[in-house]
Length: 235
Image 1 (cartoon, rainbow, N blue to C red):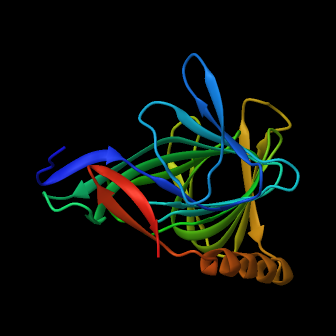
Image 2 (image 1 turned 90 degrees about the vertical axis):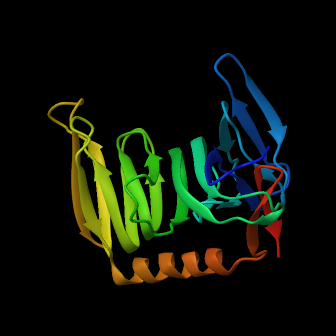
């Protein structure tokens, strides 16, 4: 595969750590295939969705080639629905990834996860997290998310959070230090309500300490372009 200028290719996600015996699913249109999750492996997909359902004592840290870092905690359901990334490249491969615009669609349908997201300003870049009630944009912030069918709670620990209206898709911004609560309206179940309040100082400290641990967790990863594919490399 020879690339000239820029090319949109499959983004990659590297499994930094995972509990023993964790599995993941490839969810296709007509079938689901379950495999053992391999630490130190890079995953990517053109068509199937990558689904992670952690059991009671299982935890997984994932580094994305877009820069996003995620920790999926026990008893959670997390998916990578689509991930494409622009790479600027010529013939010299392997070489360190120079990532451009990307579109990353993930989902947390149940449980809890932490996210550390890189900042972007390009209108062609998007990092969206789907929850059962509403979609949000993770752009240049640190977040703790709890999601299920009844409510979604997002702690905006650093940066800001974009929240998309289900009807209009209009985005409203929530600021650092805010706990955002999303829940079905008690009056009309098809309507979704949003409230927010400041995060309590003790809770804020605990969650930001957690994020620091996740950020500094080994190994450190670099992404490279090898034969037209993005691969994570342990440093």
